[in-house]
Image (cartoon, rainbow, N blue to C red; front, top):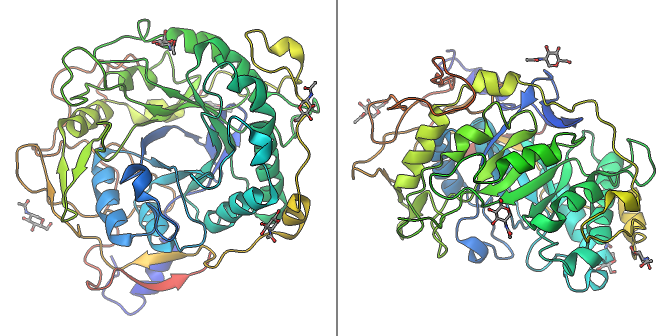
Length: 479
Ligand SMILES: *[C@@H]1O[C@H](CO)[C@@H](O)[C@H](O)[C@H]1NC(C)=O
Ligand SMILES: *[C@@H]1O[C@H](CO)[C@@H](O)[C@H](O)[C@H]1NC(C)=O
Ligand SMILES: *[C@@H]1O[C@H](CO)[C@@H](O)[C@H](O)[C@H]1NC(C)=O
Ligand SMILES: *[C@@H]1O[C@H](CO)[C@@H](O)[C@H](O)[C@H]1NC(C)=O
Ligand SMILES: *[C@@H]1O[C@H](CO)[C@@H](O)[C@H](O)[C@H]1NC(C)=O
């Protein structure tokens, strides 16, 4: 470690790039630099729920909150957060850089309560003002290396009637975002859809979004992923009982990555206040039966809100209390053999996109593949680009200490710091148990993936310890 010499800050500059970009390759996400398959080990992050978003403040605008949460998530073992509501007019440099240093990618929804397609009348909301907003979200985040992708729509289809009118508009939004990125951003960024589990039309939806309107694989209207918000595994369930076997069978030939955009049912026999959830689906999702088709998933959700899905409770003084759900999920992650999970190739990497055709739709979704034309000034926006007040840049951290207390389920304080990863690393399960001695997996692994010793070793090396205390950040590095 060379931290005591004057070049320390410059030496550190190179480690600002703690993650390699991810891109879509066929049915997989891969590290754009190494080609290694990327599996999402993720968590949905919306502290304060919808109230946590106001113009001028969003979940990635407060650096102390982000530092606290990145430290805790690193211990949990996740490599991705999904954030739903974002304001592209504020700076996200500090939060994005914290998650980047922690080896945690960001999957970002482009919509907000103000700017979203109205699912009863999407044509009234598919406008130049809407496109201006979503393109600003692209501009506000595409400069961060740990941006994983954009969710163009979340659960726009939530019953049979909404499946008759919304798909052309959501597919048009995917087309517009991908055209915007191709024209204005210097790297590939996956853009896709997150579906509600409307079983009757789920296969139709997957076909609708993955198909090519032109018959060519470079059609921008092909979704770069099809995520499923899945709550069918409740309590101690199983691959069959939760219907995961049907998902794997239905989507085995996918040409686009699949993952769970949300999971973690909290309604089961014996649940009190939504938990504690055993998270036994983790072994199934990352096990041999599913990982060929699914690229992991994101647990709903990090903070305890009124609907009781939280892993942690945020107290009034910004301190955190871990819930038993956190411990259970951490223990399930610790049982995974991460090498085996990421080494396994998808089963369908070479599938071409099917050409969009009415024959792909059999269970009641719209068969209309004529997408709406780009509205208003949209074509000019794509050709000329839009601007944001704070173009993204990665900044270096000057503090890695917890800015607020974290209390475990035994009532004692955790003593954690942020571990800054080196360039090609993403975060992995830590092998530790909060409040425990360090060995995460008591009991035998129930993973269907591997039977041998599959305790993940901590790989997060404390690269920069004991940096200057005081303000969180100094210096800014443009990428
Ligand atoms: C595009 O047009 C809409 C009105 O349709 C307007 O609200 C928006 O500001 C325009 N975008 C830009 C970047 O000028
Ligand atoms: C969809 O199927 C799953 C798995 O069989 C089931 O658990 C779930 O309740 C179904 N959802 C609906 C809305 O019917
Ligand atoms: C994954 O696919 C690549 C390219 O086809 C191949 O080189 C590699 O050996 C495969 N890895 C595994 C674990 O099958
Ligand atoms: C198909 O959808 C487009 C809008 O995307 C609309 O203009 C057209 O009228 C629809 N066609 C039919 C037959 O409904
Ligand atoms: C907390 O961490 C510091 C620095 O790593 C160490 O010196 C101290 O012993 C730790 N305390 C506990 C209770 O583990």
